[in-house]
Amino acid sequence: MQAIITAGGTFAADNPLFLETGIAKKALLPMGGTPMIRWVADALMASKHIENLIIVGMEAGEFDDTGLTVRYTPARGGIIDNVLAGADAAAEIEPDFKKLVLASSDIPLITPQIIDEFVDICLQTDDDLYYPVVEQKTMEARFPGSNRTFTPLKGGKYTGGDLFVLDRRAVEMDLDLMRSLSGERKDYWAQARLLGFGFIFRFIFRLMDLAEAERRACKILNLRGNVLDYPRPEVAMDVDKLHQYKMVKQILEASPA
Image (cartoon, rainbow, N blue to C red):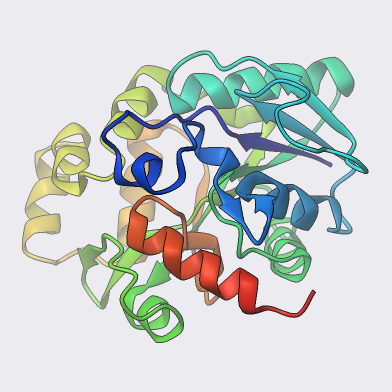
């Protein structure tokens, strides 16, 4: 199986992460003397499921990729188009690929064991998209003060992860709607508006649990999705803000080599 890492994000000159580190490309934020993306890449390559990597939005030579089986491909713009760029590169390597693993470059706390477990779960069924979410209590117990954004649903509040499994069929979904949704990825009210009045009503009054949200979103997007209430908060501990960078950096630098 191949894995895609999306790594095209850059910081504006006034972004606190740039002011702190002097690093413009997010994937290259230093952690323990190692660029953030290398932690993600190493975890993926150590998984029993992953044979090679496709990195979207970087070029060879931007970081030390010694020991990695990696192909680089240019970014195309938004997250959906970058995923498609990675999928196209995967098809050139393996024309008959069935499923792909997708990760962002900013979840450096994932481990090979987490990836193995997640993919093992996903391979038990044949859906188009597998998306992990982490419940607020689980997230805050592991990462107190991380200040994630949580979506309120009946039965709990959830934040989305940045590790996915995609079936080849997933690229045939309603891409225009998906581009709109991904553009509002941190704005759950905007997402609800795009998904329709019924979704909004049940969302506002917390009449919708995780399973119903999955069913409704899959119907609108015309795909077979599987939203997993996942107990590993590392998949959702992405580095978006300065305090999150400092928290994750401290954890990694305190870990045994």
